Length: 311
Image 1 (cartoon, rainbow, N blue to C red):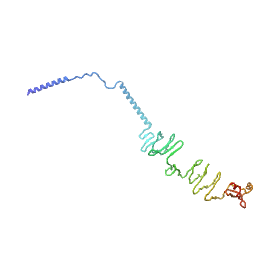
Image 2 (cartoon, rainbow, N blue to C red; image 1 turned 135 degrees about the vertical axis):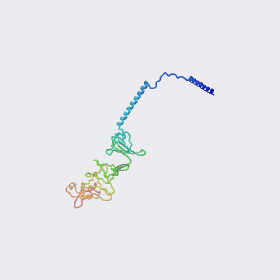
Image 3 (tube, rainbow, N blue to C red; image 1 turned 120 degrees about the horizontal axis):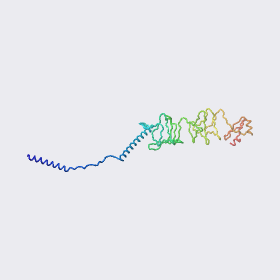
Image 4 (tube, rainbow, N blue to C red; image 1 turned 180 degrees about the vertical axis):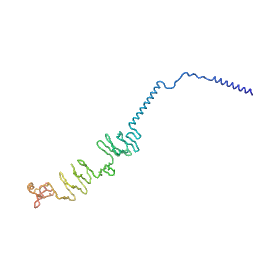
């Protein structure tokens, strides 16, 4: 038993010595590292890197300075930019604003204590379109004229309730209580005019004139021409005709005068008769022409006088 234990110990020692020898024989020595390789950027590469870093820093400083300058010049703030303010109701502009392209808005309103002025070098055009984008109304204010293009043009009073003026393709209606023309030449109408009353201003004359054509006044129930505090004068270059188809012509006045009536040839010398005669008789030809004849105890009217023959 002791011999076997001794043999195992010796065998173990031999095995240990063989392992040490084998490990020593297999051990390889590392070669010596005499060369040193530096790690990093040196030389021109380092100078280029520093140059690019410096250029980036300068660019950042210039960009920051320009940003601060733009913010200061444009007056940026939390509420908006300069005269342009943003709020819940929309955009508010103060001062003069210039638009180089079309402006699409829902409502333009000025402040309560100032006017709304639209200016343009050529014209100002306001367009209204429907849901399909078609033009339904247009107002153009140009250097020569103001043009409105729409289906119906209406002008109302201050409160918006009373209609003062309306125009469409068929008619133009003046709904105001009084229409006043202050021009020195009056009003010129190319066609007929329908109105219940034509009245001049106080202490001013009313004149109806047709320089090259006729002047006609018609009414189904009558035409009344009156001068309450003055005289009424009707004159014509040629004939003045009063005609009544079914009724009569009534001259009702304290005195009715016919001036410039011709004198009949009852005597041989009309000049002598006019100098001696002071009372005349009014005679009427069959054609309706009126002339004078010297008045005597009996009628001196002669139907065959030269006045009736040439009438």
